[in-house]
Length: 218
Image (cartoon, rainbow, N blue to C red; front, side, top):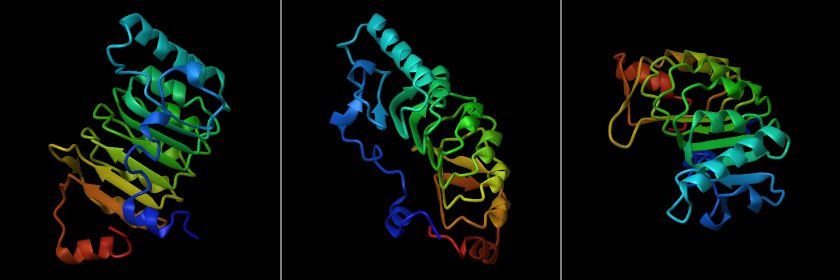
């Protein structure tokens, strides 16, 4: 039985800022009040924050994530995420949902410890060169990757036996290359597929494409 509802399949599970209104987006750890679902914007702070304050705020969140490892089940980031913040976020053992709007992270290996993760959004991560770690997230139901311009081979995703929705998105201006679509043949649980601003390098006939896409909600 599918985990996703018809609406989530049609509109995509992740949309907008993931259901967090601006007033609920948290900047400082001191404002945390025990929530299990959290949206954080602790970088790219406006002129009200000095450089010193900005560094302190980032350091405090990193310490929070590394220390309170069972605090959260859903975590969204709505500002730039450097690698050390990415790694710290992945210390949250109980995460079911994780969303990075965009970031400067290149190494995804910290994700491998998130054994409960079902919903993952990796936004605008052009520096990623290896997606092997994604194939180890065995409970993943939704995967949204954006601007993986250094990735052409998505074969590691065939290990995701629970995955129902896959979105591969290129940048707003430009296109992301995909070597071929052969990996889809082995993804039996997949029911929703979207390739946005992407170019498939292998040439397929219309009949081959019809066969590959026949079971998907596009």
